[in-house]
Structures are given as structure tokens and as C-alpha cells.
Length: 358
Image (cartoon, rainbow, N blue to C red; front, top):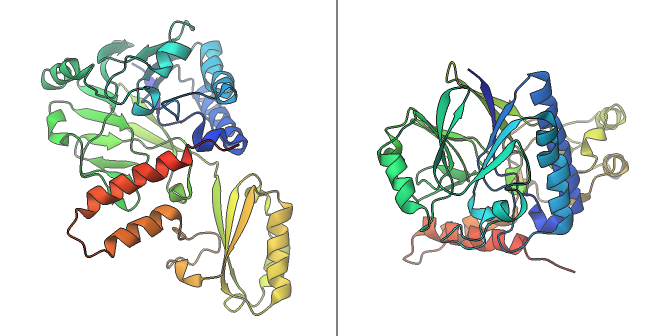
């Protein structure tokens, strides 16, 4: 029997091929392979969305994916299986043109890609792989789901009733009850980790937008002998929030001077001001974070964005664009399906993040 590392939604080229995110993803992949080396894990299944954009691939992002994930897996002899996600296909309704066939398939001895439902055997343990379901593979997918030949399915599925990301539950897609014949179902696609019944979304490897702040990211390890799933949390953060309050913390200058700010290096930072009566202390905090080398610092003067959390570095979420959109829709009195409207607006928002600028 074996242990299998499951990773998903790594989105090479995310955020418009931003070099800062390429560096962040390199850190994540280095950490991933260090864990596999230390724990002698020789099997990996990627549950889809290895690339971010469906229409084209940036050369540098492709190079980074090759050097940071594909080649390290090949050099280690890790038995790697990658299934098609919706972001990996050029068309929405077919896998006829896809990034895996064009850029990965047939180029490596240990890396295999799948656009149709396939059963693989890992050390004698059968697993049903289920790529993103489109018109081109739907008949095969329905056959595999209704008449399973394995107890475990790993795929890139769109199921209703699951949290896509914090605050937004999917109200579209297949019913999870269609997968009742499987003992365990593990899926990519939704970046938030969640479990209902026998179905688990394992969550994305890293943080890609402010909406991911404080939402655990990482990968999972499945033990074929015990059927136990272990979550391995990613220690690397792309987004951090610091809180300034010199009323609640009268000794704030001493605290700032005694703090190591290195964790803010190469991250996006929101500095939320709750109370500011000591401009010197505030400037000291700002300068300390700035000298650590963040990508960007945004000062938020409105303390109403804070939720009830007493840790100075931790609040659940500031007013980012997705939050504003959801609150706006919730406030509408028009006769519309707010869930579908939120999903539609998030699709537009995510498409906007992918627009290339010069």
C-alpha cells in the first residue's frame, strides 16, 4: 500500500502572470517537494487546474511550472497523475484543445495526464480519476459514476451545496448524491476545503486573492491502507493583515521595536488603523513593515472592517472587491436569485483578474 500526495488548483500564471506570484508559487512547490522527500512519498495526483488561463499560456509561467513542479517530480521518479481541470481546457464544453496535451503529455516518463475518466492502480489500489466533465467526456463520466469499479474517486468536480470560497456556497452543478456509490470522493475546483458526507474538496495549494486570506491552504496525503486523509497546511502566506491600535496597546512602541517583521517580506499587506493617537508609533509600525520588503502596503483607516479577533495580525477579512460585491447583491430588493447573481459576478471578477495589461 502507499501514501498519495493530492494537490490541486495550482494555477500557473495566476494573477496575470505576476512575477510576485510566480515567486510565491516557487516557495510553495519547494515546500511541497521537501515534504514528499522527508516522508518518502512517491505518488502524486494533481486534481486539475494546473494552469490558470484557458486561452493562452505565458512563456515565463510555463517555464516556472516546468522548473518548479514538472521537472522536480520527474527527477525524483514520483509517479504523477494530472487530470484536466476547467482552466486547463481551451473550450468550456470540450477537452479537444487543452494545455496538458499541448505542453505536458508525452514529455515525461513519470507524469501522466487524463482528459477522460480513467482508473489507475497505485500499488494495487484502484482509483477512479474524473477530469472536468464536459460534453466530450460526459457519457464516459456518467458510466463511471453510476457503475463504479473503484471505491475512491479523485476528480475536478462542480457539485452544488459546497463552499466555493468563504461566504459563497455553490447552488449549481451536480448533486453529490450521484457519487453515493463511492466510499470516498476527493475533488479540486473549489479552493476552500470542505466535506459533506463522503465528498471532500481538498482546497487549493496557495493563496491567490485577498479572499483567500486566513483560509488554510495546502495539500493532502491519502493513505491507501487506512483510507485516512491528512491535511498538510502550507506555511507560506501571500496576504497579511496588521492591526494598529495604540489605545488598546499603550506600550505599542516597545512592542513594535521587539517584533520581527520578516514575515511581511514578499507579501501584500493591509494595515488596519483602529485607534491612532500617537503618529510616531504608527509611522514606526509602517516603516518597520515597509523595511521588511512587502510587495504592497495598503492603509485602511476605517476600523469597521475589523471582525472580532484580538490577535494583532489576524482579522478574517477586509473589504475586498468580492466582499463588496456580495454585500451589494444582498442589499438589492429586486426579484432575483442572489446566489446565482453572486456566482455570475464572481465569474466576471475572476475573468477581470486574468486580463493582461501592458
